[in-house]
Image (tube, rainbow, N blue to C red; front, side, top):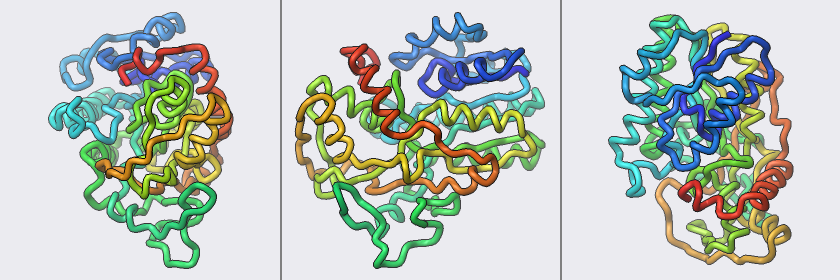
Length: 353
């Protein structure tokens, strides 16, 4: 089997490549990366040693994609991953659209012409921010939880949001590019018979992540806390009660391996750490205080665009389809990141955070 991974030198792409090479005999991986992201160069040599056929190219350039060899599957792991992309002054809206939407269009055309399947790494940030902001929440033991005394909106349960939860705008420019990519991928599947799996991922976290606060909060928080950087609780009363769930990329890779072995016509599913792997910023800070010494975040009540108070995904669909669930718990994820923190002082500066 020959597989193309776009963004192969990124955090997710490199984990996918390593896992698939470990799990398959006779597999060949072609990796495409423009190496523009600070930190991506750190993965290039190790992937080359593993036998990945690295191609320095840009997914936004149709000519670069058209020149790639035919494959059986393509995995789209290339993206501007920040929810603030297009509004943060670091990336323009046009650059975001070119990276996250035009790149997917080029890859879909490549798959159609190569008769290859596509696995799209999407995001939980396709879900509606206004609807998330109106969830009935209650503060309990340092975190927000769903308030059982009030009615919940459709597609919400104690396990989290299902795939039927609202995707009504606004969802951020980043979320909009990923939702549009999902819809185009589904149209290519229906119109051209391209097998497509769409994985709506929660917060990916683990050692070696090029994390910033708006894209890799777990990794960023540990590195910043250990480096004694100023940390802030933004919005939501400045208590740090906002909650997200964490997913290790090796658990995502394990699912991707199952999808490659069971193509069919694909499907769409939430893929995340779920309720058991969820944590608030306040709880994360308490963990860091115990590990690295006390560092109280500043209470900053200012709102940041696109922040949400609670976002946990219901994994029922993917569990029923593949008998899949995360195998790496949140404490193991944090321990892995902490070991990386100890071994890599100055990591945030090296990856541009």
